[in-house]
Amino acid sequence: MAIPSVDLTPRIGSELKLDKAALLSGDHSGEIRRLLVDRGAIVVRGLHLNDAELRTVARTLGDLRIGGVKRGADGKTLNEGDEGILKVSLDPKVNPDYARFLFGNHLWHMDGTYEEVPPFATLFTPYRLSEHGGDTMFASTYAAYEDLPDEEQSWLETLRVVHTMQAALFPAKRNCTSDEFALWCSYPQRSHPLVWQHKSGRKSLVLSTSGAYVEGMHPAESHDLLQRLMIHATQEKYVYRHKWQLGDLAIWDNTGAMHRAMPFEAGSKREFHRCTLNGEEPVTAPGEMAEAAA
Image (tube, rainbow, N blue to C red; front, side, top):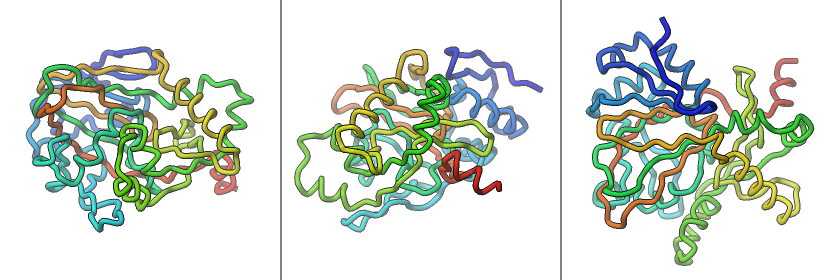
């Protein structure tokens, strides 16, 4: 049975009309996953999930990430917190490992671009809100690709982009120290196709501020192309802006949508709890998928 829902914009975002018991049961998980891929981001209001309930919902939808990822020169592994619950806060007392990187969340990004198989989806719920600002924005990289001219789509499908930590963080902290920049550079980098053909057959742009350069392209041309595509993909028609209320749950398809946090007041105790669902397929270029099927 279809879940009652309301589209929040024409191209991305739907609000589901489900209560907590229905969500926790897992009875609607297949339909939620279908809507997630189709709509990019979904919201359920009034749930007020605790950590155990958030984990339960996550496990009905996919493989909950537990453990650490990414190790830099300082030897620290960034882990997913307490049994898959990551506390997202700029307060180092809440999460000392991640707080030193989270300032980059104000820029458009896709999580896990340093991994061969990026995370499939993210579940996000607020525990403390900022007094001002702090909305989260989502942009559909499916819709952005689909609206490009056929000739440009074909060209972009031949390109690869290298993603790095320093590309993701430097624009948000241009006054960083030399030691900070060296630490960012020590984290793994990854080359991905610019266009991802998913197993579903649908295609999306692999865009993120972590995108440092296009392989084999002059740096100026590479910079201009990535900037142009970012501007294209974050047009109002591809974007949903969510204004948080306590009790909300947002889930987004990390493989087909970028996201960003809007600025909020300095010293805010804003805190969200996050579950990440492990990826289910590597980033595959259209030509690579055709070769594999042959």
